[in-house]
Length: 120
Image 1 (tube, rainbow, N blue to C red):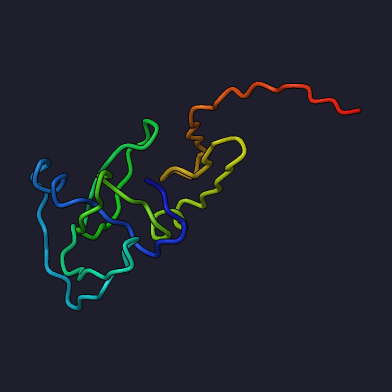
Image 2: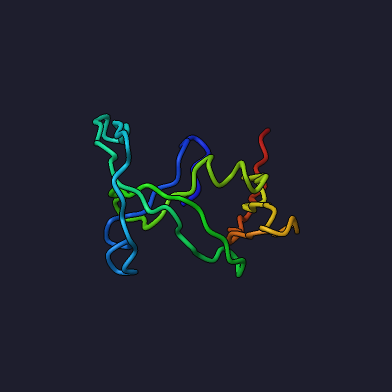
């Protein structure tokens, strides 16, 4: 999931365990606000998390936190570094890879049918 309202990147503990990643304890923990209007303490992270996005290998530091049905959340940490532009209308995300080349991640477009409505 990509969330430009999140300041940080997050990965689920399940994915960390499944991939055998090394968790480290943060020097300082903080409370992360959740959609349920509660807060949960963030105190662990993976200092280097390598992954592929649209065939582009990349890596980032990422905090360990339960994400419900998601495995990873890319926040402003990664989005800013990669000069990301989100086009909601086109369902596309444009970003620069680690070499400065432009990449586009294209979502699935829904076809919408139009009906003519007339009035008298």
